[in-house]
Amino acid sequence: MRVIRITRTTTAMARAAAMSEALFRLMSWLSPAYPVGAYAFSHGLEYAVDAGLVRDRDGARDWIGTVMSVGNGYADLVFVGAACDIDAGRPTAPGELRGLNELALAFQGTAELRLESTAQGRAFASVTADAWPCAATAALAQLARDEIVHAVAVGAVARSHGIGRTATLTAYAHAYAANLVSAAVRLIPLGQTDGQRITAELMPVCLAAVERAAATPVDEVSSSTPMVDLASMKHEVQYTRLFRS
Image (tube, rainbow, N blue to C red):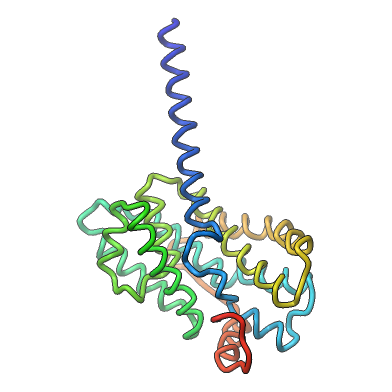
């Protein structure tokens, strides 16, 4: 009996250690400190603020919530989930990733939104290949360097490191929304407390998007935020800019 108890305890400890390692990796990859340049992009929010479309905390929350529920934030979650389903160790993985990446590229509605996704994707793939190499980083290296979609790269790497699909989707949703909240704090401007209030209010929106995206086949992915696309187009010719999108 004692041997059985020790075995069970050891197994539980090993499982807890693996979960801690997975959490550490996710927090590292999706931290603002990870050098992908996420801070440089506002997803059209800079123009929306400049044009008076977003003026306060409630407006910022609604704008970001829409992005996460029916916009590129939601679509990216579908692509993260689809990439999580690709085993980078299979010989067919590079082709599968290429096809998924091409679809994800097609969902970037404007030149600036494409830049936002691919600049971060390129940086993520490069840094991760050096710091956290795996079969997925090798497969991603076979894609065109300037066309790697961030969501696809994150999902593929997470799967390759054995990180759960739901955890990856949740962490990605939080990072996506948090970056836009940070942009809103700087642009409107808002205080840091208001920024955290927005983040707290967005939690059910993000978790609902994660649940829906997890159940959505990639061939049914959708995005419906024309005002975000228009704001991105206007931002491209905006007279003064702090952000790249």
